Length: 559
Image (cartoon, rainbow, N blue to C red; front, top):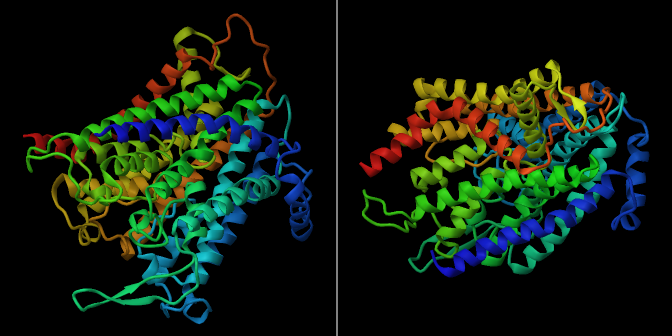
């Protein structure tokens, strides 16, 4: 690694830490209903949205009503996007005259974008029209991210309110998240990206003649607007098949840096917002520190794996699967950030990473996407581990477990375990099925441990709502489209429903005043315990699967 590589990583991390309280404070004002920077500009639009939709923003609901509204909204979005793909040939803004999408691919894509995953079993520029990309995918990029924030807000209210019965209004949380947070940031980032060369047009595809005398079709389209929200909303995916390694999506080192920063910006800032909303900024910083330590630990191992000498090829600094203009360090940093944040966009092919680096990308997702994770989703996933840690620590010292002055009972622990195990179940069961069935092996390009890693990565990415792919596996088949769709749904709603149930249970409890015997959850001791629980739970659950894939591959390589 060169000095410039170290400087860039340091600058990235320093900016992430510095912007966390700035954006976090702003979001606290938005979600607490206080005056903030964007209210004078968009306040009337918010009122208009409520008026047109018939929503009474001051009316709050219990967790069941909140969950019902969330599920109905997402179901309608799924159906709309599904139908849109089935009839795209009859719709305008399709200059490439792309045909209608097959039903199983359309179903998989609709579920994927509705669940904030953006898993894509297709090539964007050869499959979806401009209209479907904008009206379907981009809209879901906004509302799926806002849904994650809404669930987090409901959970925070459940933890911070005293003897209440309601958790807020889903429609209000959805509107404010979209209107005041995601939309302004996306407009700002899109303008900067266009200025740097990311395309944003409605032109027909262009035909170019190469120096060899052949013709090359160059795709066009409204890319910048989708790229901005896909990064800020931790959606991932790509307007083009090669994603952020495509020069029209990511043309310069500056856009590369900005897009990486956008991936973690909101998830990191939400930790500060959480601290403000529960009345203890130290709580937020403790969770941020845990996420940060796990992030840089994975990054260090991943960099070591990529810069170490490969004994098979007898060289280091391998450039296969990486862009020359982006380089190894940027590729490794992006792979670590995007899998830690359940984003899924890539600027290098993860299939070409070293076994160690590929394993870190897998582990980031297998831990439950809690290392910053998705917008809102990462933090409420981390709070699941906080509940488990408080419960285990309580057993160790013989005290009733408490979080923010509220007692953790059997119901909360059961729901936390369900949320944790639901994703584990679909990952391991579907990976095992695909690994021994003709349906799963028929589209696999590699055998041995690397081929197993490709299958494991696909279901991990889907259940973790990440969306990145290991490549080397064609998943646009009936078997994979349907099984991955099931993993997408369980990975999203198998966590959201238990989280809302926890919020509904906790909101009714009284807050016990802090005493000398209170187990603190805002210091380095608790942070260390939390890291240990995350790693132990993840290790016990997934080590056998990892040992069959990247671990064996690494051992074979050094042998």
